[in-house]
Length: 211
Length: 203
Image (cartoon, rainbow over all chains, first blue to last red; front, side, top):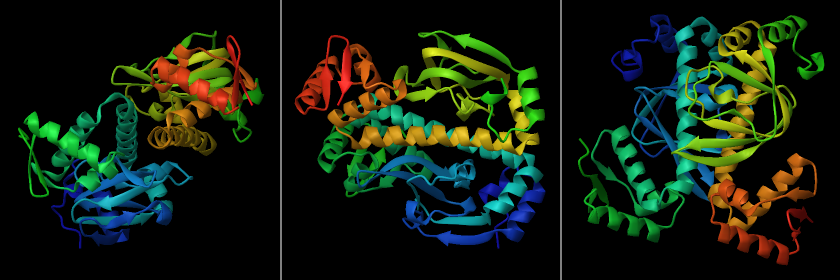
């Protein structure tokens, strides 16, 4: 049963009727941290509504998982929003960054809801726009920013999304997500530590001045 | 006039598009739309050729070309929103554009399924183009990136022999002029291109 205080259901601009139909027709699925929710090879014919947790969206490039953006139950909660409009699958993976709860609805039903619930249509457009914007930002930063700055932006974004100042993350994962090598990431982490932007202890990174 | 529009568009829609929209002609070098603008208008490229740039972090990044066919919506990612435009469009060949207010586009999306599908197709094309570009940037060494860039230009200009400037390539690919010059020499050694004074021939 969907918890009535979950984030999505506290969204003030979501119509009450929509909350009822999602409860009635949605298929609930729970994932634990690091579970793959969707990969390019098992793309879904369903649209997912995140009611709890945070999802990391990555893009496969040269056997690495390049980080694109986060989805969360608070303000960016529609999974597969890209594919709402697209017929060609993208090489995008969705991984649970925390424990996650999702309600899935078939695309055909979603198409009807878009007409029935005008606010849902607006939210979809806003979410799609925000995600596209994140992708464009990453595309621009690959060429413009040095690795150290891209790394710090990624750490800060992750900390904000996961609502913690301390991240448990491996150098290898960072290298994967930023399309770099472990050695370069280690060097960049050392630089950030010298600049007092982060502190490192065993497999943990703390963002300084997080609050 | 009617042959500009996709075959599936009903006559009623075509009449509305032509009566509510207006045509504008652009010359090579003109900018149709720049990033950071928040226009209340949508731009459908009917004829010609434009170069698409992403404008972010106070820089311009070359993305691709777009030919004027299929009634292509240029600013499809912001077609139905009031977000600032992310792209700018520089005219390469004389171009003809149908300009229509976003309010009308929104309205026709609601009333004409074929129009809605067309807008989503344009959006899809733009999304795929961006993801392709990202993949290229992440995967491809400069030499391949440079050759792909030249090939793309040759395809869109419909000619094996293309005009080039090292400055333009360096700005488009965000590499130094020195690296581009070195890359072109390597491509020539590999017999992939032949350079003349102002042109490159793709072999």
